[in-house]
Image 1 (cartoon, rainbow, N blue to C red):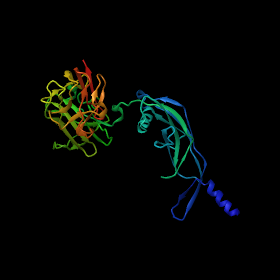
Image 2: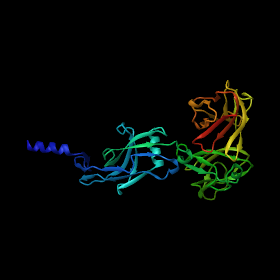
Image 3: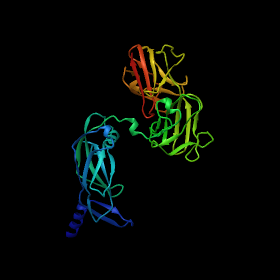
Image 4: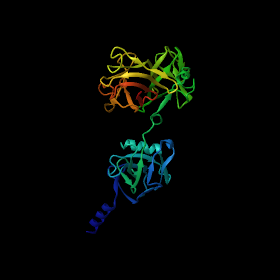
Length: 370
C-alpha cells in the first residue's frame, strides 16, 4: 500500500513527462518555482510619434526546474477574458530580468488581435517558458489597459527607394535615396510595387534599400527586367508619364508600365465616352482634378490609360464617398478588389478629387465638394 501511495504522490507533483533519447526512458520534471512577471504600468496610451520608444517595461524571474533543463521565454498577450485564445507572443531573452515593448510593438500586437484603435482595452500579459514544442509553463497574469492608434502605413510596411534624375520634377531630390519615391511591400514578402511620376523622356533611375546607396540595384544591361547589384546600369523611362513599377528584390526582377489615370462614368460630364485625366502636383505629391462636376444619380471609376486593365475601386463600405473624408482605395490589377464596384457621391456638385498613390499598401482617395 505504501508503494502505491508513493507512486500516486509522484504522479500528482510531477508537472509533465519528457521523452528522452530512448523511447523507454522518461524524465519526470518538477517546476519547483514558477516564473514571475511585473510591469511598470497598468495603463498606456500608445503614440505613433514615439513608435520606437519603450511603452511598457517588464521585470521577471525565470522558472526553476528540477532537474535543470533548457527552455525559451516569450511574453504572451491576449484580450482579457479570452483565456489567451487567440493570443500573440513576442520573444524574450531568458538571460536578462527585464525587457521593454515599444509603442509600435504593442500597437502591432493589438492589430494582430484585431482590436480596434483609439479605444482602451484590457490586455492580459504573462511570461511563457517553453521546455519543448508542446510543453510550457506560465507566470502570473498581468492586466494592462492599452489604447492603440491607427498606424501610418509608411512606417509599418517594408519599402525600397527609387532615386533618379526624374525625382526633382516629382517633388523629391534627384538621385537621393533618402528623399525619393518608394515602392512598398504590402505582403511584407520582399516584393515591392508602386508609382513614380516622370516628366522627361529617357529619365533614369535605380533601386536602393534602407534609403542608402549600399546594395543598390539596376538593370543587368539587357533591359529585359533583370536586376544586378554589380555592374548595373540605370533604368530608363522611355516616355513621360506615370509608371507602375514592380520589383522582386530576392528574384532580382522588375517591370515598368505606363499608368496615367483618369475618372470616367455616367456621373461625370463626358459619361462613359472619355476620361477626365488627373494632373500631378509635385508640392503635395498627389494626383488631382481641381474641379469636376459629379452627379449623384450616376457612378464613376478611376482607370489607367483609357483602358480597364488597371482600375482603382472601393471597398464595399466606401462606394458612396463623403466630402472631405479620405478613404482607402484599391487597385484591381493587384487582386485587392472583390467584384467590380463603382464610386458615387451623395450630393451632385463640383468636386476636387485627390488621389494619393505614394504608398501601395494604402492608396488614398479624397473627394471634396467645392
